[in-house]
Image 1: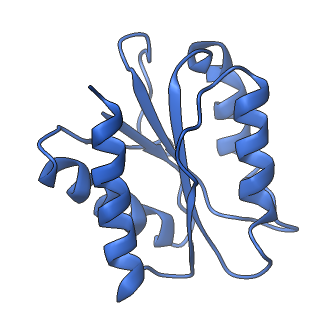
Image 2: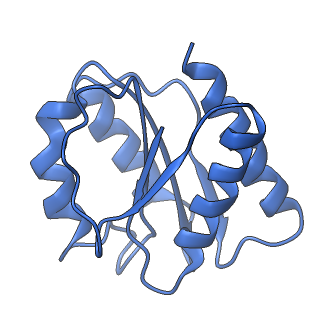
Length: 141
């Protein structure tokens, strides 16, 4: 299972690691892919795609790397199960609700409520990310 993310300060990357831990604890393989340092060959063989991006600016997805990347893979995401996560520093999660709505509009199945964490995952939010990974793993039957 590919966990594809962008992280500016490392908070979303930490979330990705805990989500991967949950996926692996549930018996599935997780591959972490930071789009700043890795290319995505193809999502053709992926049933479930996990995407992570923090809130930036006025509660938006990161614009210089992640948004163009997302646009480039939209056609590959159609008909797939997509789950979303990200960190934020302010606001109420509007960026995530907008992102979730966009994924549904392009034809993705988004069966789980996205997980958002204020700043760095710690305490209960670490457990939330691990448990989210376990839920994600159960989608890949």
